[in-house]
Image 1 (cartoon, one colour):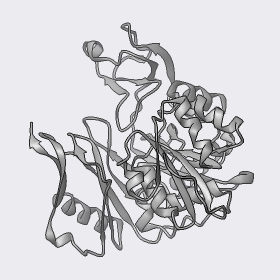
Image 2 (cartoon, helix red, strand yellow):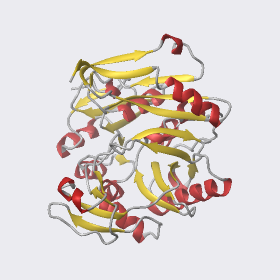
Image 3 (cartoon, helix red, strand yellow):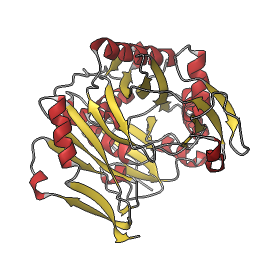
Image 4 (cartoon, helix red, strand yellow):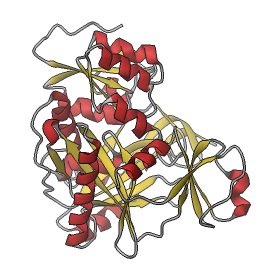
Length: 384
């Protein structure tokens, strides 16, 4: 077990889950705070970044409760957690950000949709369903099926294009959602501090892989009209103020061909769509997250340069020990920032890192990023 901190002047922060989001928070805040990372793997990314490893699973209530021995405030790296353990922490006097009551509704995607509906936040029409049995679609086809729990990085979402897809449905509790024709998918990162203070980053444009429904790349800022960008920020701020909990949130939205904005999903944590902020903005989403946890005033969200970020996913056809392949020309490039997450094994489609490219214009950033993405790959060591 780790040793308790001997420096009472430094804030002791617990993180449930030790993945890449936790690692980037540790890297951003380790000069001001100590971090205690609950994860079953002592070699998890957050431990490699400098966090103190606390052995245990994020889905184990008792393991989460042990963070009270080390931390005065706890946040999370992922949503698949034992919320009851967070409730235990709160009962023991540990601050939990966001609060357990909200997290219970956020981590269950059906409850999250119901919450949005109750707050009069525009979202796609939906109906609860039990995927263990065949179902009818109230809207015809295509229709979107979503699992209530366990969905991330494209998992837990299935699009049925016809009744012929019924055999491939998700056999779990969840909901059906009307398929929304969209002009674009956008995301707004929102930092919510104590006392209702809210700061938002500019909307970004998200492009998803056709297979797997995982974010492929994003463009920051989004290529939308100013009034639509302002409307997206206003909707994001209204949504987070209605939730009434300090924290860092990623709000994904659909923008329809008629320029109507619908909230698709809220992530109550740092988000893939906010990674570009580390290079393109004065202060990153992780800088904000640490200040929220510490109860400090929020920072400016100014974007200083256009950027494109793309994910580094494990290449198809390979698995095993992680192999990173990058063109020599990228070494030392002032406009290319390669982040690998320290994961020692790589499977097809696994999120292994990301790359951010900055430029003077959005178009230049897109062109450069499309070139760079052919020059860096991560794969497993063994062919399948």
